Length: 344
Image (cartoon, rainbow, N blue to C red; front, side, top):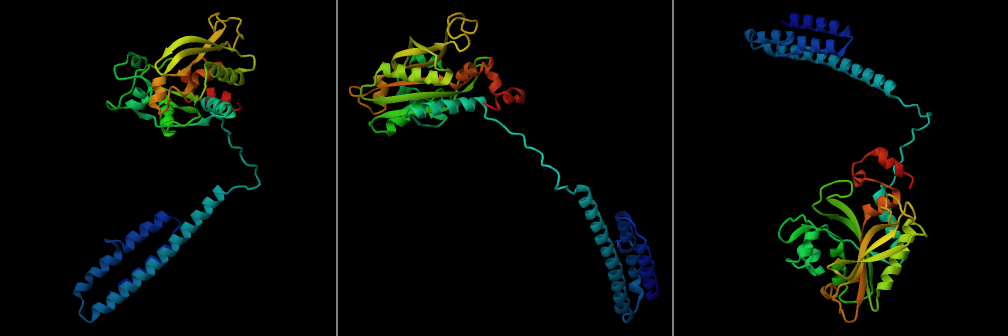
């Protein structure tokens, strides 16, 4: 049996020296060292040996296995090294080549309009306030002079989560939260940007989610003329120094008196065109003097303090500023559309 083991070792080592691929190497490993391999087959005959011969033959068998495994391991390492060298040559980088320029992105047009509006009002001394998008019925409606049975609630088709929790329909709750945090102290001078949600069917002019910016000023002797002057300053910085505004009487539960604000048409300058339906004016926002009940809900003495508030849709401003014809363009991630604004 010893002679058979030596012959097996010599045969295996001779064949291993001729191996030229990892696949052939693996085949030889199975042939000689596998569970059904030649070495295992020889060692199964040890049961017929005497007690004195078994340890001797067992040691020889281990030496044969070790010799074959050693050569197999060396061959495997050589193949792996060759494969690594091959990959390094194939994947090497010429560091003298000029770098590939990275595509430079741009600010989304809605974000750019929000930034512009914020900068304008910060320049007028306003602070920015933010609040939660999931609101309570109290802050979204009741504290703003909209009790549960108020018909004006129908003006805003609301996403309710529970009877008392909802997705905010306006950023006015931020105004109320800010007022209550001030503990009746003035002045208050804030704008409140953020997303709002209403159950609207998506079309060219409506979306179930859109961006809104509202403003609030509270102090002593705040008048409607202050509101008009503020909005005049805003539209001239946003749309150009020749832009004018007009206020039309309207109704909002949280302001009294209330008004819709129009600007001279950004396309025709007020002379009349298809965009403004020949009127020369375009509606952009709503505003008014803060209702005494809202002041009182915010912790202010309505006999001592007055204030004004306004609110605008960011998409509406962006549509007018950039001449966009469909609100859905802002949300479709169309790169051809967005690239038009990469340098604004």
